[in-house]
Image (cartoon, rainbow, N blue to C red; front, side, top):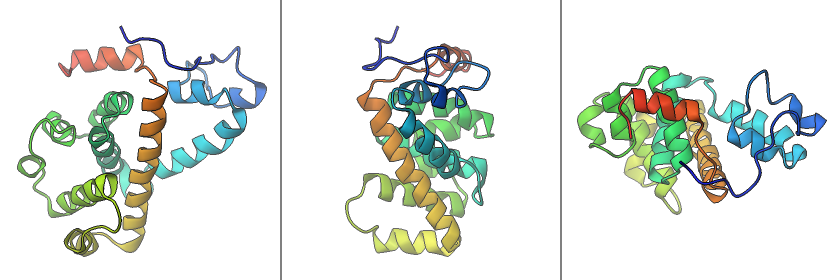
Length: 187
């Protein structure tokens, strides 16, 4: 069992009126339930995250590659576990998920030139300091249009922000996610 998060996760009934619309019909995610502590942040953070991490021109598969890979590189337990399930839902294979999580070499699983260039870009942005290496820039520019490179970079950097948020507050993975991971044999 995971210990309690650092801050109280507010359920829908306790949430301020401004926050309740983000809860939907079911239980809120730990991110939403923690951000409800400050509804003014919830009002701007969730719409931003929804666009930055949602499929736009790159599509759901590419976005999940970016989110899961970034989260694995930063070792965000909450995001890795949550987005492993999402990655499987959007069609990534168990082998691809394992490679993005660092459990096997990426270059033996991802053979598509576009995806390999995207992963190199993700790694450079997530782990780098300063400008991206010129070889990585050239590889990404060769297979991604400018708007795709902007969107990919924003997905990585928004994920970096959420990784730090979730890790700092020690947000728990939902029991439903844990059950799905167990059913898939993922630890």
